[in-house]
Each structure stands twice: as structure tokens, then as C-alpha cells.
Image 1 (cartoon, rainbow, N blue to C red):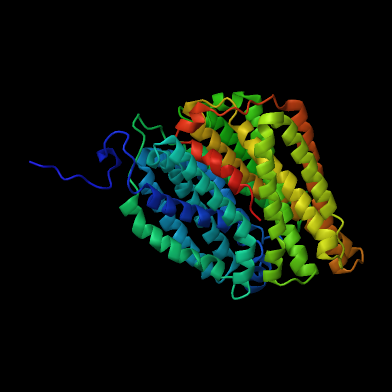
Image 2: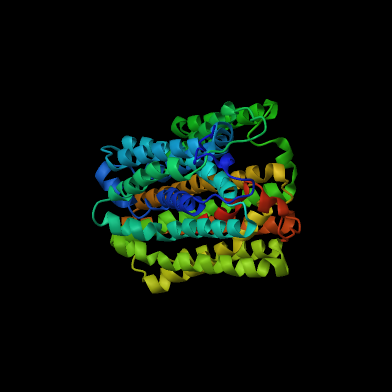
Length: 504
């Protein structure tokens, strides 16, 4: 009697035989990765149009971004555990479905609360889909050379999504901002059709870990409350209950998260992972660079549209030099890192990025693009790009094979959380300063420009502090290739991070 082989079962292939569907599967995985990265940056240029159409307050507008990144970052590690337990293809399919439905609701939103709620749902879809997709690449590409090519394609697609986000946003917003969400639908439908046909199912062979749902919920809830409190400070005094209640509540939830993690038999982030000084410092520095980056991008786009009166398409195109500069910085860092080490590059990168933000702070109500905006874009882009590969290397310093997936997952989560915190802090700084200047009799456009400039200087100061920390705290990190990272399923995240760190 002949047993019919299920073509979707990866274990049915002879040992070591490459999956014949692997390149088509990579197209599906990379296509969804393109959308997941794109949806964090594609809304930036569209924010003023969204604000006018759905009547967002200026302080509430950042939630269009924060709702997505906080949920994605907060539940990313939990999503990885779910993929291990219930199957990566199954979780990827579920994440894509949630992301697609949420995209439809985003585009159809008739109120600010409806849009923000659907952005939280989109973030949930990413938290399920992204780690499952990352874990499938090394299973599909068992040959080391093919795997590196696949990871290169994955990283390039993610970087392209980040770079094109502002341009796509500008072009579609000129028609209707809702199309920045509707463009997801054809890709999602195609992915839902292909996923069961080209992706094999896989899950952990060993006993699956327990789910640390309380840890994920308290961490995400605490971060959301803290960010909400910071944004409330843009329109309320620091001592008001509107600010203190969410801030204190968020801190309490984060403390509860620490308690839960310390007592959990299988925590999302084991204490052993936090024992390495360089690893922890690199993750904190990743949070800082992303906090400043996203805040800078959003406020600069607001300045170009609201003060200089640029169209959405022109604003998107004006962001392209930053993407090119970031790519150049990443290439330069990759070349220099084996020669001079991670620590000097991070120090130079953070201090150079601070100089770029300082240049950006010399904006006025009638500044020219070439004289006031472009220099900051290029300098900040080049030196921030110099940081990203080094931060990945540091975040994975002395990570064992057992923790390679955890290391890359924590680094990605820190990027998402940093984006939300940075946007909350820098927007609050800008709006409070603007309001104070307007009450003092300053012309609104001038006050608004001064608020943006102050936020850029605050961001520059944070980067200087980060550069000093890099000098004082980081160990010398070896840049030799780690065998564990070339072999473990968690590795792809470390490759995509450098590309995802270049949104424009």
C-alpha cells in the first residue's frame, strides 16, 4: 500500500533536501514583511490630512503611529512563543488575516477612535506574523549560502519598504489618505491564497514553553499608559490628574511586569539574558536612536507641510536623501566594523547623528529645503545608518544558540517601543513650547517652528548622552561571524533589523 505524501509537510522531504517551494515562499514572506514595515512609516506624510479629515487633536495624532508600534513591540515576543507552540505557518496566516481586516477598517475609519483602534489591531497582526515569518526562513533554506541570499532579499525588501514609505504615502495621500491602507488588501489576499500552498508547517520539536501572557499584557499596558500620559502633558500641566494618573498607572503596570517576569517559570525575557552588560546597553541605545529617529521624521514632515506648505507628494520626495544616506551609513559601518570595532563606530554614529539634529534645529518659517533641511537629512541619515549594524552586533553579543531568537526579538521590540516613546516625548516638547510661545504673543507659525527646533535639540542631547554611554559602558565587541547566528531559527530577525532601521 502506498502512502500519499502531503506536499505541505516539510518533514516529508528527504533529510537535507531543499524545499522546492522555498523561493516562492520567500516571495510571500518578503511581500508581507514589506507591508509590515511600510505600515509603520507610510502614515507619516498622511498625518496632516488624517488630522483634518477625522478631527484629531495635535496631541492625539501620534497615536496613529503609536497604536501600531506599541502593540507590535509589546506582543512581539509572545507572538514568537505562540508560533513555536502552535505552528509558524498557522500563526503567520492568522497574523496576515488580522492585519488585512484591520487595514480595511483603517481605510474605512470615520472617527479618530476608530482609526486608532484599528491601528492597534494592525499591530497585533504584525506581532503574530513577523516572528512566525522570521522563524520559517532558516527552515526553508537549509543550505547556508542560500540562506544568506534569502536573508539578503528579506533585509533588502524591508529596507526598501522603509525608504519608500514617505514617497508612497505622499503619492497616495494626494488622491486620498485612505489608500495608504487599502493598498495592503491585494497583497494580503494573494498571501492568504498562497500561504497554505507554498509554506510548510513547523513548530518546536522539543517541549513547548509556557505562555507568559501576564508578562506581555502588563508590559504592553504599562507602555501604552506611559505614552498616553506623556502625550497628555502636551495639553495639560504636568501635575494634573490627566497626566499623573496614566503615568503612575503605567509605572505600576511595568513594576508588575518585572514581578511577573521574575516569578514566571518561563518568562518572555529570562534574567540570564539581562546579565550581559553590552547586550543590555545596546538594546537601550537602540531604543534611543529609534526614539529620536521617529520623532525627527514626524516633526520634520509636519514642519514641511504645515509651515512651508509643501504638498504631500513633495514632502515624500524630499525625504529620499535621508534614505540614501542611511543606506550609505549601513554599508560604511559594515566595511569598518571588522577593522575598528563596534564601540568606536557607535560613539561616532551617535555623536554624528546628534550633529545632524543640531543642524536640523536651525529652521525658520521661511527656510529653504537646500539650506536648512537637506544638510540635517544627510548628516543624520549617514551617522544613524552607521549605528544600526553595530547595535545589532552589540544586542547579540555572546548570545547562545538557545537565546538567538530571543536576542533578535528583544532588539526588534526595543525599536518599536523606542519609536512610541520618542514620538510621545518629542511631540510633547514641541507642542508645549509652541503653546507657551503663542500665549506670549508670538506668531503661530514662528512658535510652531520654534517648537520643532527645540524638540530637535532635545533629541540631539539624548544622542550625545547615548554616545557617552557607548564610550563608558560598552565592552569591545567581537565582529567575527557567530556560528550560532548562522544556524539558529532566530537569526533572520538580526538581519532584518539593520534594514528595518532605515525607514525614510
